[in-house]
Length: 383
Figure (cartoon, rainbow, N blue to C red):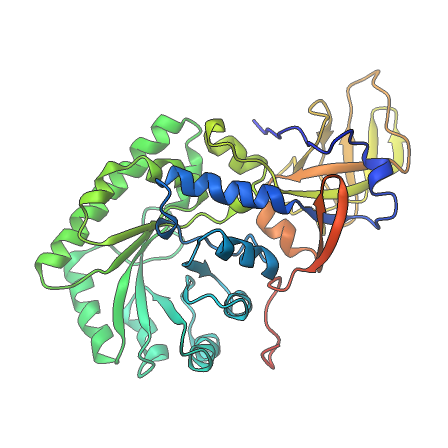
């Protein structure tokens, strides 16, 4: 089930409001961004330090600054460009939560050296990753396989004890454990998802205590992407762990049809990002096409790639690169060619990554144009 909240522009008629905007265009509502950030912090008892958001979704430096202004001080990222964007706004605690090696790891070391006031940490899973960090003095998080089977090593006490000593031997420090349980998205029922996630946290808590008893300090533990956010927020056991536990959802800053279906409506989250598209064709009496193909609205999460704001009865079909066909019920009128539509993505993170710039909108008007400065990757020259 895909849901979208009502778009709240006063007297909203998109054709009039954005007639001068070339489409497809990425729209961001900064007021909704701020409200979403505050909504998540509220679910964490008002303690912003319990949230280390992944900025793979935000991508825009000014949005990252808004997150800092709202009290967030800890961040995650995946690429060196995202790291650079965070450092540019003065972030002081960043985990690069991807197991980089080789030249990518060397670039992280370079950025860490250039920003000595920032606490930059890296991610490893086995001793095979350690050579890239030898002599760097950086803190390292150990990535554990939570059952998602994407990355992460076995959560075994003996293995982690040996790895902790190996980390010290290369001149680094064990900063903590990383437990990404993104596979919780497979549970549609919140109670079933919470049960599965809590079983994982029970096991993780036993692991932390066992390591502590062996004299291996685990200063921090990071859990939960967006699918497991509600489960982590309700897990009372964290309070008894001998460590600092944080959650790390990123999608919730903007939201999409998927996250809004995964998280409780009572949290008050809403979509802060839309793609503005234009109707360009009427290929059949029950289908029109707009200019928001998969080079605009990401298609990695499957079809439909989005929902049309204000028209739950319209069904976006399989897109091609530039074209998005949308089917309407038999007998329903087609929107005229030239009509502008607001689309809520099914997966907002790669959708934002598709655009060079974003239009910030407030009260139905474009108030600024912002560069999506963390999209893509750094050039080989570090730019």
